[in-house]
Image (cartoon, rainbow over all chains, first blue to last red; front, side):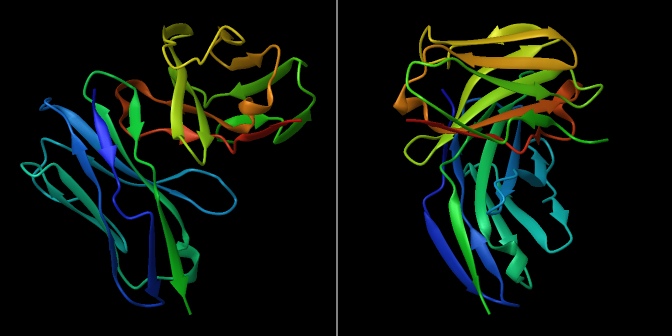
Length: 114
Length: 114
């Protein structure tokens, strides 16, 4: 079974600085998708960014970008110019191609200090 | 689009009572998921439907839990009888065919069983 590991239960960053959240996954499949979700205190789960495994180019969404290392099975999230509103739990998720199921990591709590 | 709509947002009930959680997915999404979130276990997939048909219910913890999707715009998750260990946040999510845009989550139902 696929597993997703987020090794950093908590991280903190100064406002306007850059922070990287780590995620590794375990799979023997070649067709899959990876996601980062944000869960602020409101508890709403919000999709931040999505990466298809067959794409070599790292996905980018404004201040959010990923470093996708397929051979290492690593999928880290970089947040640039951190803002107070970025404070949240961040979840990494894996989805196998052809299946709609997602497997989530345990999450990383990000604190943004003013 | 109003997004995925869940009700109620909060539910407090006594042990032994029946609890019904409700979800309206996004129109056009053909897959619907029920997840449970706790501090100890993170996000766990309970069951998911594709085109209103249950595909995988292996995450349903026991027979006290049941889920239905009578049509494309409505699903319920029922717990009968409820127990204190069922206390958690229950999320409903939906996705389009091929999961091109990832899941869209509802705002969740916080269930407290006393």
